[in-house]
Figure 1 (cartoon, helix red, strand yellow):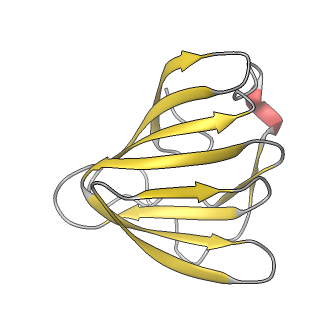
Figure 2 (cartoon, rainbow, N blue to C red; figure 1 turned 60 degrees about the horizontal axis):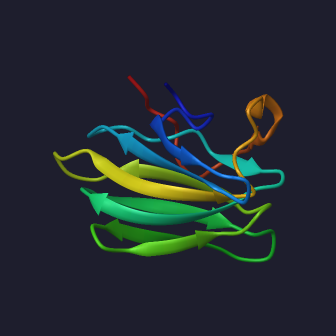
Length: 119
């Protein structure tokens, strides 16, 4: 399945207060930039390397992603990520509240710093 940002997503578990998923972005790929309306995300990078752009409306920046890094994406923060190197970027993410079952309006496409490149 594909996430609204274009990365591969596999839901691992869903509870009343949150949900957890595994995300993968293949080498050479760049996600679509999005902003979540209601959910916040906690990420833990499990493999690969990449970069993530974030913008909370007052400040923006780029974080280097590598295995073992954790980060927080508050509700309303715009973000976009891309893989660097020859290994897929993989992360486990937790959303709170849980990702909506009909999540069609949860992620809004925004303008990010990079041109999306997906398979």
